[in-house]
Image (cartoon, rainbow over all chains, first blue to last red; front, side, top):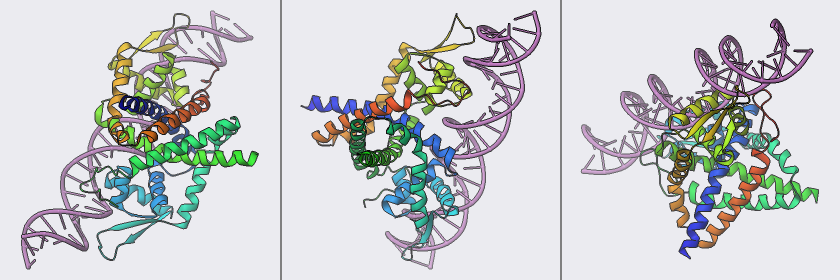
Amino acid sequence: MKEKNKISIDSAIENLISIQPLLSKTFTRSLRAKTNLNPGSLYVLGVLVRHETLSMSEIGCKLSMPKPHITSLVDKLIVEEMVERLYDPNDRRIVNVRITEKGLTDFNAIKFEISQELRHDLELLAKDEIEILSLASKHVKDILLKIIVEKSTCINSNCCKEE
Amino acid sequence: MKEKNKISIDSAIENLISIQPLLSKTFTRSLRAKTNLNPGSLYVLGVLVRHETLSMSEIGCKLSMPKPHITSLVDKLIVEEMVERLYDPNDRRIVNVRITEKGLTDFNAIKFEISQELRHDLELLAKDEIEILSLASKHVKDILLKIIVEKSTCINSNCCKEE
DNA sequence: GAAAATGGTTACAAAAGTATAACTATTTAG
DNA sequence: CTAAATAGTTATACTTTTGTAACCATTTTC
């Protein structure tokens, strides 16, 4: 039984490693073509969609990015008015970042834009294949979210606290 | 019925867009930490595992990368002795690239290395979750491979021919 | 056989990601 | 109250990626 688990884990990893470049090719390229946002800023926006308000450090943890990088990415989003800085009255060192209405709207518009080509390809698939992909991708997303995102990798000093 | 397709497509895209940063976070970071190879070179190696021998242009098509970039990525792989250049006797302009024994071995070793952390996390999942992930990721991979890889995006001039 | 097209490399530049050190402001600990 | 710790920014440097233009060698076309 243990052995069977191992085989499933190996094949899952094998598949995920193959999926990564495919998705990267699909979305990153068209992101560059269709928006003036860089992938990093979109990642920040993505976690803010899930969590609404996070401090700079928490964003860094969720994305495993160094704090200086987060600063520059948030700066870009501020210029676009997609997020806003909120200064915490209880601890004035902390900068909380919250997604704005515009940020939410734009995020969905950008997602639609960058998926146009993929959408077109998917429409050519058989109905049952679409169903399978829809369900399978949900399973993959849910399990990855469970084991990856919530386990914030600590790359800045002392940044990872339980929620 | 058409409407139902559309909903499935939308949810599939939504899921795939969420999956991409998760996988990118998981693999790219540990790739940098554990090997002296960059992601681009590993992508090249990946398509060569699937196709064994490809010309420079064909690699560029499969990965949607400009030709000069392919040259530099292949140069790195040559230094590592993971691939070799073969000059086509029928058309001496063409440079074919073939993965070596060492390339194949190293590729598998690298895949194992960069998935160590994920493997550890997966081992903590329930048995049925592992089964689901294994199957679901295979479905996602198969369908994406079908619609993305084989549709080589033409970013260099005239590079995309049917196989 | 000269001109055009093709496959690839070289050179170069711009954008993005990654990483570290030094710094300011604020809070906490002794 | 001073010293240490924390949150974030600034500055800087390096790598990777992306893109373009110019170029050479070879093949194709007329």
